[in-house]
Structure formats: C-alpha cells, structure tokens
Length: 327
Image 1: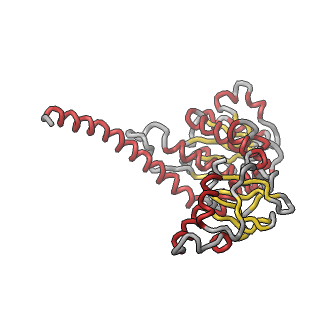
Image 2: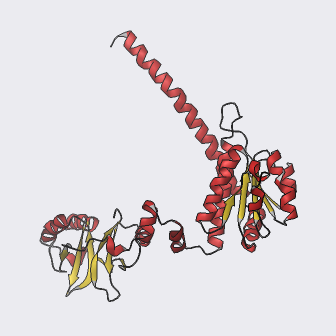
Image 3: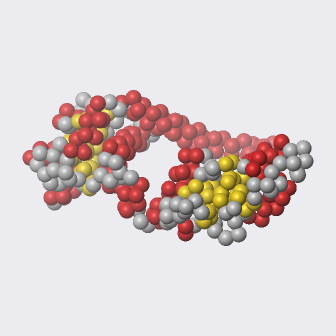
C-alpha cells in the first residue's frame, strides 16, 4: 500500500471518528441527564398525578419554541394513554386560543428557563379560571416555578450542544418527565390495553391490538405426534411443520409440546435415537391461549413466559392451532 493511500485512509478515519465521538458524547450527556430524573420523583410528582386525576376536564399543555414542540408531544401521549389533553401554543394563546381553556382543566406549562414571557403570560388567565398549574422547568427558583401549584424539576447540568446553547438535553429531560407523568396517570386510572386499542385503530399497532388470534394462527397441517413417538420419527414431523415444535396428542387431547430446545436436549440424552419417546422429553401442560384473544394478548403472554409460541385452544381444551411470536 502506498503512503498516499495510507494517508487518505487515515484522514478518512479521522473525519469519521470526530462526528462519531461527538455523537456518542452527546448521547452520554442526554442519557445521564434522564437517569437523574428517577431520583427527583418525590411527593410533588405524586401530587401532580393526584391533582390531574381529581380534575374533570382536559390537561392543557403549553410551551414556546422547542418546549412548545415537547408540549405538543406530551399532550399527544396523555391523550393516547387515556388522559384527555389538548395542546395550546403559548404565543397563540393570546390571539384567541385561550378560548380552548376552561374551568375544570389542569395546565402543564413547560419552560427550561422558567422565565419565558409567553408562558408566564398564561398564568393570570389560568388563575382567573381557577385552573391549577403544574410546571416542568429547569429552574426551580424561576418565576414559573414559584407561581405554579406544583413544580417538577427538569433541571440539567448542561446541554448536549457543544456550545451549551441549543435546547437539546433540556428538551429530552422535559419530554421524559412528561412521559413519566402520562404513564403514571395511565396506571393510576386503570387504563387497559383494550382502552388503548380504541385510540389506536390504525397501522400495525392497531392491527396487533385488535386482530384476534384465530385470524393469524397456523391451523392446517399442524405437526402432531403421539406420546410414544420416537425422537427419530419426530425429526421429519418438526421439519415438515416448520413451526419449531411438535404437539404431543393422546386421544385428541393435548399432552404436551416438544420444541426445538426439547428435541436438542433429548438428542443429548439419547445414546440412540430410538430410545427416547415424546412423552419423556416433552413440556407437559404447555401454555395455551383462546382464539378470541388479540395478537397483543398473545405477544404479552409469550414475552412474560419467555416462549416463542402458544397453542391455541378453545374452552374445552380442543387444539385449534398455533400462534408464534413473529405472527
């Protein structure tokens, strides 16, 4: 390799390493800042949850600039997790959008400095309507924090921006705090996956939440053997079935299941393939799920049990099919 080619490659590597190191450093700053939030979840956070739950109408989320974009996202998260919410841009509020806020609402105001004029301008109007104020701010001594009913600490040591100027870490921290509030409200209000499905009818997520297992399960040519089937006989059954398992059936009753893992362990035990039978290596009483359960239900059950497939059975325990995690 010539010296010129070597220098070109080294220069190229240096150019590549600089943005990689910069990006990694920025991510480390952001991750560390978010990690500190867990230590700030105290009585004030619980009070904020209780306050919102006690109100009858919307959570109005507002902010300016980058904080306004964060506020819009947090409002959307509230709504998707069962807490009715609207976003009101702080600058637009004084030009007619104040009419969106009514008695019975709760306000969540976001400002990194806590001194944003447009955000502070909302406070007198909110007070007139007796709308309580929760703030997420990076300055707990700011005007916003002092005039809030509850102030949540979103402070940071520095922005990930190289010049410590552009809102980067502060916006991520504010969003994380808002998301934590939305999730806490979701659990406290008893919001269920079925409720979530009502708000997400479209796209892949909506399909997973609403599609019944019966519409996605494998139900024809299922790999089946008897309890006395030998390991050698099970190999082609499992291969042909292409599900990575064999259902062990006795008189049309499910006795157990033999997975790839069971088969491998059986092969390790057997000195000859003809020695072991299905009933000796199967997992008895395998997990089942009903045909009317949703794909979300199946996905959750498989993840909790750390398995990759479930037997689909009716209330009478009749085997109807198999659902796999990638289905």
